[in-house]
Length: 213
View 1 (spheres, helix red, strand yellow):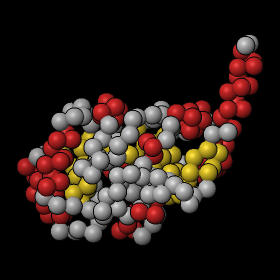
View 2 (cartoon, one colour):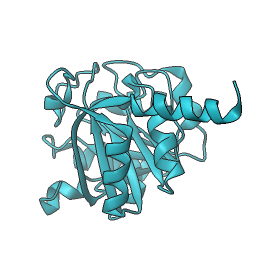
View 3 (tube, one colour):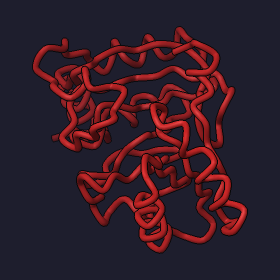
View 4 (cartoon, helix red, strand yellow):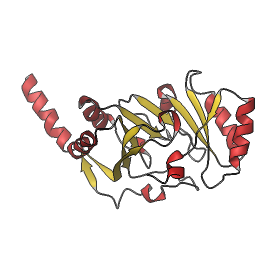
């Protein structure tokens, strides 16, 4: 097959790739290292981690959401003109993210991932946020890709989980503890922990305080 035919075949194949999408929207990143930055969010449907306190339970099933093509997603992202595109969920690593991230980056967009790491890593990213959950242990392939580690704290036991996860990532990774939104009493627990463990930082869901998406 000549190179022109090969490129044509790849182009046709990419047009057939779709992802189940809960929503796309343009807002500010509300958490972690990039808080306050203009971001276009692509929320994929489907999750098998089932955190009991999850604030996106409507995204757990992928069956009720429409499939969006690569072209549709990339066009929407480019029109928003964000600083970055954030692929989130649900659990985005349920899907092969190489096609989507390739198209986004080929379009000149910076691409970030938010994941629990519960499935094998895929895709090309400029930044990877791992938020590991004890309800489904992360796949080992995620740890070498992590830019920031963000552990949600809903009980004192979650601090032990955070310590286990810290050991699996590079010392250069930025490490956050984030109080579960419905358990504000854990803020003081986290503050006290960080005062004694200065390698950690606190992350707050500022978008919820501001009342934005």
